[in-house]
Length: 395
Image (cartoon, rainbow, N blue to C red):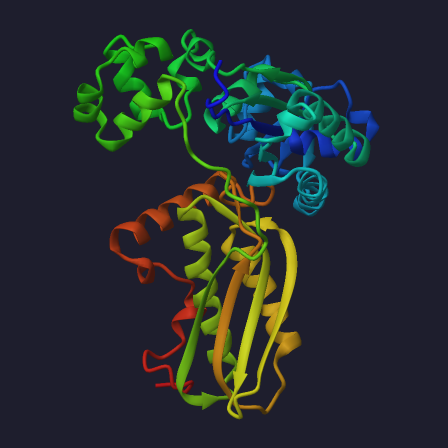
């Protein structure tokens, strides 16, 4: 191989059954038994489950009632988002302080770019030592895969579990993916999977054999992307993790106000808007900030590090707490703002430890209506108290 060949070294790390592992750290009696993490009642849903329950067909997002029917001997423990956020931040700090570049893909998944380390130290040895360091300093098991790109490393991590590692050498990306089911390919959802299987495409190798023009006609731009990925090609970069990433909104009123009900309703309206944006982009926030500007143009703000969430109810509660601590009574307010930061990717779109199946469906229905008719179509009653002219006075 010539010296001019540029080879990336990318590792994907995944904390094994993260919620379950944290609960076992907290209570050693949970080791080696079927364990389900979720809500307290029969109408709640499974947030996570141990490997011991999976052989019975239990999986996350399953109704708790069905999970216990499949595995009646399972122990159910109520989820603790504070603990999971705490341990996620511990592991984040360990990785961030050890590697050159890190991307936090979710609360329990990370990508690291080790390109260049191979010349001086060796990526294999580096990753083994990082895995050991995470285990020692956090107490949590973690699996990883090392490859030349994000796609292959993520797929291979599934083969490394539990608590293991795997390496796919440069040049073997396509042959590694070839025999795997198309369901293992990131970017292939349920509808696409059904469509491809109806065409007789069940493996990634079969997918790679479909001509690119046909894939473009079949699935558009996503088809071209899947064609490239099925051949083991992925040039997507590691996106450096930064707690400064945020989304925010603010409102300047036409008239300064001391109307507490109006200010609260504005904050709730803003939080609902931002929480909807989080769920649309499958992100979670770990920090909320409230900002106030008074009539004399003095500007104050207060932030709170919170458990990772995208739940309206949780964020509204935290926002109201911050506002009560921040606001100085009898001072006229000119502007109010809300910012959500410490953003991470995450399919955990709602608080599965508190919500029932019905409330899960309610969130999904509300978001679907907002997508179709606009964000203002569904809102809490109190957030409708604010008049449209933003003067802080009741109409």
